[in-house]
Length: 106
Image (tube, rainbow, N blue to C red; front, side):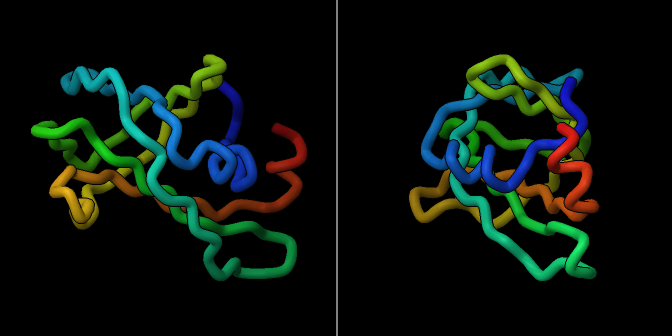
């Protein structure tokens, strides 16, 4: 697994189907719904939020998920449930904050 997904990588994937899974949840596809920049703790850090939409009728719990890109890159990410989409689909969210040097090293 790569160390950390970058804002640019995830932002360019908005609308794309990715995969997530954990030990108990067998969701094959999620859609990258939103990637929003947020206020970083310093000029040397980056911060952003990720929201993925679950398939209709599927719900995720708070926990660590493997988020897998179409190209096979994968990351272990702590995600929590968020507000459902306008269509009623469940969503999972993650927040990222790390030194910019990690983003260029990944």
